[in-house]
Length: 279
Ligand code: AMP
Image: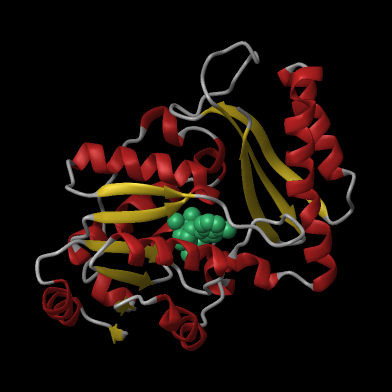
């Protein structure tokens, strides 16, 4: 496994190791956990080589405190990546990725008007900026994204379509802790007590799926928010049940689309997201 920090070095090593065969790519912001590693393992299994990027992208943070606080653990990330069979770790600095400020404005229409897009203005524009740049640098055949960031996946798919990029986007299942809590780099910022209580979020989503037939969509939404907020450590920012393509609010269980229940909640100062497919 090789660590590269410049685009030039990345291109040289990718060409040398892939020899024209398929390149699988996993973009990350580091502080890796089993969720990330499952994506990497799939990329290794399905391609001649796998490239993992570790870059905390400043343009997708709408809260400078959140950017400052974000965990950075490259040494440990390299240790975790080595046994996966990943060939190249690309860990550029901000100047390498953005030699000039990126002023591009993407338009994702309805997709970015809801949930994360609504509560984190500019977030998905930053995601699209960095992912499009990384795709340009790595030139992957396949890129792997976790369903944990369900809306991000929809945004990336839309960006690939808009820019007509020759890359296949591969969605990967959510990996959870034993408690059910969706793995996240941000979990590292929770105290032990907060972490125990944070599992109420996924627990409530699982219960909600069972209650689906017994309540209207509106009743279920109120129930979920009430259940989570009942815990003194947690505070819901939004909960919605949306269709899996346009991400628009589902009004009735009779709608024929696939429904996904998505939540964002604060545990202390730490913002956590999770989701579950309802059918
Ligand atoms: P991040 O480093 O948080 O930007 O995440 C990098 C990639 O890993 C994204 O595609 C995430 O959706 C994915 N990911 C993060 N956590 C998980 C998880 N618990 N299960 C599956 N994929 C995940």
